[in-house]
Amino acid sequence: MSIKENILPLVEQHDWDALQKLFSRMTNMEFRKTEGIMRNDILPGLANDDFWEALFHLVAYRHQAFITCILAVKHLVDDGTLSFDNRWIEELVMFLKQKSPGALQKLMTMAIPILETESQIDKMFCAFGFENERNRIAALINVTTPLAYYMLFKILKHLADNRELVRKCCVFILKKNDELSYNMASIVREYFDITDIRSRFSLAVAPYELSFIDSSYDNFKYVVTGKRPKI
Image (cartoon, rainbow, N blue to C red):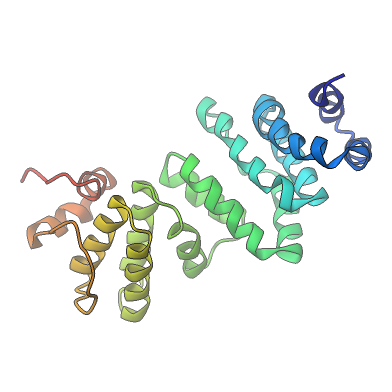
C-alpha cells in the first residue's frame, strides 16, 4: 500500500493515535514525503471542521513538519466553506502559544495570502488570538499582497501618532526589495509624511491621490500596483 492509502483511512476515522503510531514507524524518507501528501492530497479533501481537527493533530504531533499544511486551507476558500468557528482552532492556538509562538505567527503569515477578503483575514486574526494591532502588523508586514498591504495601511492610519513605528514599517517594507513593496513604501512615506528615509521609492504619489487611496480597497489596490487614479 502507498503512504496515502495507509494514512487516509486513519484520517477519515479520526484515529489520531493510530496515525501517530504509523508516523513513528516511518523511515525519515517516508516521513518527509508524508507532509506533502497531507498538504496536497488528503487535507484538500476534508470539510471545514475535519480540516481543522486534522491540522491540530498533525501540528501537535510535529509542528516543524506539518505547519505548512495550513496552505491546504485554499480549498475551503475556493469552495466558500471556510469557517473559523471551530473548537479545534482553539486547541491549535493554545498548543502553539505554549510550544512555539513563532510557529503561530508563521502559520498566519502563510495563510493570509490565501484569504481573499478583509473579513476572512479579520476573522482569522480573531480566531487565532491576534487582537493586538502590533501582532497584526507583525503578521501582515511579512505578506506581499495588495490586500495585506491595505490592511496594514489601515492599522498604520490608526497608529499614525507613533511615527517611529510607521517609519520602521516603511524601512522594513523597502528591504523586501520588490516592486509592490517599493510602491507600498512610497504610499506610506507620502501619506504619513515620512521624509527621513533615503532609498528608492518607485511610486510618486501626488497629494490629490492620497484621498483616492483612502476611500476604498479597490482604489488602494489600483495605486499600489502602479496604476494612476483617473480623477
